[in-house]
Image (cartoon, rainbow, N blue to C red; front, side):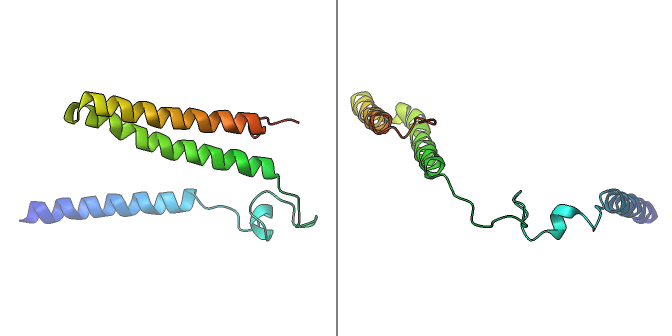
Amino acid sequence: MFSMIFISLILLTISMIMMLLASILSKKTILDREKCSPFECGFDPKSSSRLPFSLHFFLIAIIFLIFDVEIALILPMIITLNYSNLFMWTTTSIFFIIILLLGLYHEMNQGALNWTN
């Protein structure tokens, strides 16, 4: 019984010392220039707060999110290969990939993927 309490006290002491050291060593300066500014996103608060936003960058981000979600839909198709009809699985997969490629082709024709004009 005594050894369990002794080991628990040693573990508690070591963990408290580690937390105290981590707290002391990770202190940042309170008078940090970026922390004192109202914006923490890299913009200089002394300049204009209404900077123009690139609509093209927004479109590229939306296209990336769409393809990211579609990849999340494609990955489970590999798992269902063993449990489904091979013909239906193949036609569904090909149909899904054709829709993706047609969307990508449409975006290329519209010029949304050209970063520089």
